[in-house]
Length: 467
Image 1 (cartoon, helix red, strand yellow):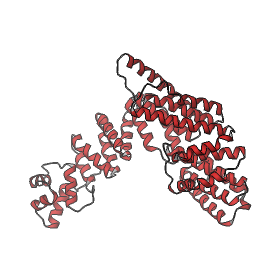
Image 2 (spheres, helix red, strand yellow):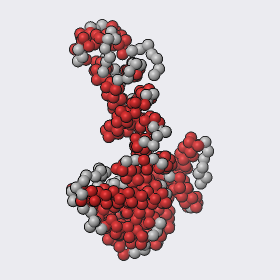
Image 3 (cartoon, one colour):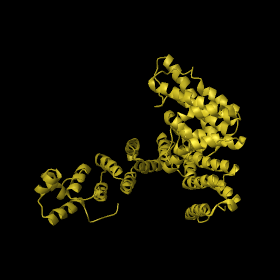
């Protein structure tokens, strides 16, 4: 903490003199006992954060404006009092006073005995949605555990991972690589969620080998845990299971493996995995949450059977597939992604479908929202590539204007999420047909590329896209 001559009591005393009001008057205004106020001003009693908020409001100051003084005074005490610091950190999180949290927690971590209570504090903030504040504490606690193979260290790293993901693909890759070495140290429940998240991240980044590895590992671990659960149930013993239905991780593993097989154009293998999460006869749970989970996977199985047959060249199922997804609005765009890919590969006409669902595309461009149960990083990547695919579809049909429009939209989206591969793909396409593009579209292209170059130079010092 930086030393300062200002204190809460001196600020309060200055206010009383400046406004020419008595302690009794200020006590009525703030709602704090006059005797308590007198002891605070005279340095005979420490002020609680709740009372500080009342004082701040009565002084007509911005919320939290005296928190730096509170942090200085509290942390300079010979014995740090968690009963005071715990509520203070929570209020700092609520008011986004992140720098103060960093300062307070750094001082507390000089004594490793605070690691447990700070970790619990971070967990509570995480659950309450104050993830920026929680990450600060997780990082400090993780630093204190760095030489131990502690489960707490692994859980800190997992929480940091989940809080740090954003729309930048390169950043997300770094986060995933950072987490990998800690997964095996997590408890059984968190480990399954971490494996699911890693397989999702690597799938969204098109790292098929890593995505498959973690999906298979999730499947093996969840299957072993499920078998153990059934055996313990038969013996009348309780077992520790995740908050989500355990069988769902087994099914999700097969769902992921089917998606990876399809991405590698192995549609027979993809259909095999569909059968693995379509058959639920082995699931013993019948509670409401489990029934909803089973229903969701059965829905996915129906849709994915249509999808994989279409992608394998069976265009007879196209109309049925479109009818199926058209009443499931959260699935429309994901279905279109694959329909366009199939149309480009097998060279068939989908103009009517693109026209029919054009509002879905334009709405997503405007809002850039997560759709359904898909993670943001997964969906954003697929949407960027989809726009390029639509552009290529129109270009193949000599509709230059529509084709270029979608390519430019894709380029803009790819820039926002740092999808380098698709940026290059868009640039290559534009350069091949540059002579056919009208002047206004070329200007738009130049403007987007200027942003790409400027951002790249800001981050790396050199431009890497020579389109």
